[in-house]
Amino acid sequence: MTRLLLSVLALIFIPAVVAAQNCVLRPDITDRLTDMFGEHQRGVGLATQNGNPIIIELWVAEETGSFTILITHPSGMSCMVAAGENYSDVAAPLLGDPM
Image: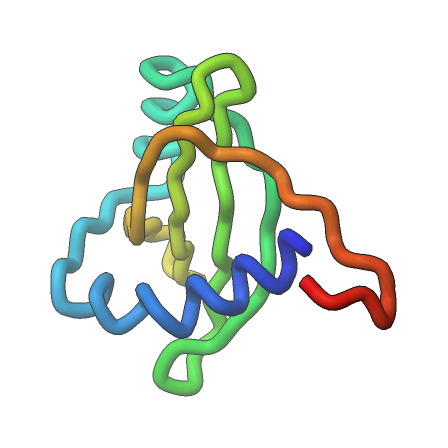
């Protein structure tokens, strides 16, 4: 389910990130997510952007429900795509079960 979520979010948010360019070196943002918000990496997936590989990351704080979605480029730069509150896992439906 996390893989599907990351794929859908990539399609929706990557164009917005390119326009906003809220990017810093990955350790700078991941240290801040952990230290300030208690978030830890929860999911990761590979995608492409303009033919170049990128990593899509989901960071979540279990205690508060805050979450952040990052994309990381091969250069080591990470861009914050989205952040929010009230994150919860959704169980994948059984095969043949309508959602």
